[in-house]
Amino acid sequence: MTPKVGLALAVIVLGACALPTERQEPGKAETKKQVATEITRICSLPPDQREAELERLQAAFGIVAYCGKN
Image (cartoon, rainbow, N blue to C red; front, side, top):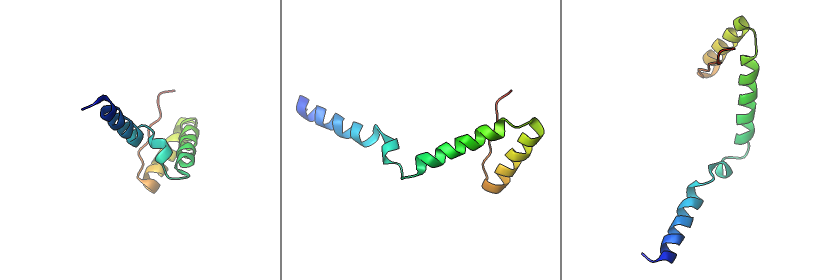
């Protein structure tokens, strides 16, 4: 393989997988930001309220989330 062909293949491969965030659907980044904000809000609640919110999240969406130790 010549250096030019190798370089061309490397550019194609890197272009195909280097920046997956740019290929995301519009609004997906905003959704991720909202989810992160909601998890931060839930984890900052007092322990009893936090557990209730985590259980609600699991029941409503099937999402199991955990908060680190405070």
